[in-house]
Length: 236
Ligand code: BJW
Image (cartoon, rainbow, N blue to C red; front, side, top):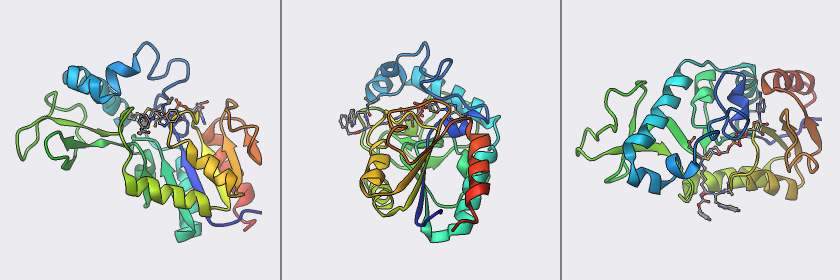
């Protein structure tokens, strides 16, 4: 029986069937790349152009991808459960937005906005590739940075607090396509378990979470999530 409130936690794996690379799988974004060279504030301070080239290449890749059936099933969950539904994603690819999800807690930012390195002001930026790298703030002429959260940086406090509250409250939690190794995002599923939620994990590979959850659903998200949703959506 599917009990509300519902929390959906997503990672790179939900977009894998759309053709977006994950980070840690074979052939993923980290293969052949040192994290310290592209996804830390120190790397950006050292060589902003190199970091921007890496992010712009990802923006170009994602721009050619479209949401898949798992993103669409998540939209249907929001439609059915309304304010008893929360979506929290680690993804920066914007595919939940493009699928039609309306309320999204983005823990790690977005590829589709930039942030001024001087005052932190955000600018929407949908052009891919960017015409010049690194891009320059239209207001003050300082460099813009990707609007993402790098290792060693704090997540937005209000976003993380809202996500943690949803994890405490939720009676059903769907964890889709994350390796669960990056904190504090990975703490959300543990908070939910501690609070007695029915946790369902969707992942072709077992993770540290798999032995702890009520249901482990192996397979690709674009197949398993819609199928699970069809079987469970009326059982509310
Ligand atoms: C499929 C599939 C299909 C494949 N269908 N599934 C506590 C303990 C230890 C360390 C720390 C800690 N607290 C903080 C830290 C440090 C650090 C951290 O967690 N390090 C660990 C890695 C060791 N965390 C931070 O630095 C965070 N900041 C912070 O905590 O500040 C305070 C602090 C700082 C320093 C010390 C202590 C406290 C910030 C983390 C920011 C992470 N940023 C990134 C990059 C974002 C921008 C970008 O996109 O470039 O976020 S890293 C990268 O990993 C990205 C992702 O959102 C994140 C998670 O990855 P995800 O989504 O799980 O992807 P994968 O590739 O790992 O997994 C994909 C999964 O999909 C796999 O399981 C596949 O099997 C599966 N899959 N195909 C379904 N078809």
